[in-house]
Amino acid sequence: MTSDDLLAVLAAVGHRQRLRAIAELAGGRLYVSELARRLEMSRPLLYMHLERLEKAELVVSNLELSPDGKALKYFELAPFDLHVNLATIVGAVAQDTEGPVNMKKGTAA
Amino acid sequence: MTSDDLLAVLAAVGHRQRLRAIAELAGGRLYVSELARRLEMSRPLLYMHLERLEKAELVVSNLELSPDGKALKYFELAPFDLHVNLATIVGAVAQDTEGPVNMKKGTAA
DNA sequence: GAAGCCTGTAAGTTGAGACTTACATATGAC
DNA sequence: GTCATATGTAAGTCTCAACTTACAGGCTTC
Image 1 (cartoon, each protein chain N blue to C red):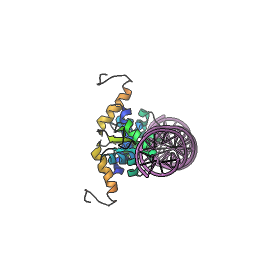
Image 2 (image 1 turned 135 degrees about the horizontal axis):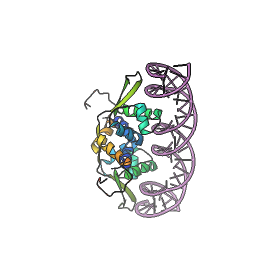
Image 3 (image 1 turned 90 degrees about the horizontal axis):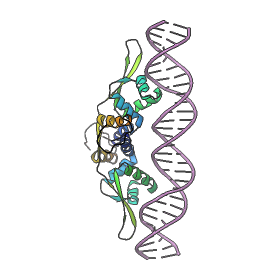
């Protein structure tokens, strides 16, 4: 995991509104407008937060059509469990100095 | 853990410079000026970051006198291991709605 | 048609954190 | 004395994320 990845997750989850969004989604998938009502925040604002959570791969979205034809953008939680400890941080930061080498997978430096 | 506590830690660690500071401190305790040189950032700036890390209880400081009489403010890592997952977040957010009750310890609601 | 939902986005404001420069203090060495 | 080290902090700038308002569509139901 690069420090960019780590920072994306930490910054994404390190915000009160996004924390609340995640907690609300813990009860099950919801579409944007409905979630906005529950969290009592404007839809465009929530939209922005959800985009951020999605980039950090903490949630997944899915545009669907309701039975009555409305477009509903559903969001649901992606499973995640990040351990914020020394090993994680040192590991992530190490990659920054380790030379910006392109590698597909693994730690073959 | 309240959501304030959780946010303090996440926001503190969710910043590139502070991540680097932590990684550098992983090699052992350092005083501010020395750490500033290693990270190549201004001392006042680093100072601010360290204060933030200390508030989140990720580092501990200690003002000491060097053999030659100089005051050195040493920082060292505090042990930490936060699991960023659903349980942690839901638990933290739950306390916000759970009524701002003062309680010493335990979850006796 | 108008009204009720929904998504998507642009444009503007604002506020907080990040960052710089500068200074005051203290100590020891020359 | 001056020069080097260190801490502590004030004051200012600046950038960016957060947030609001407003509008563009789409589809139903009446």
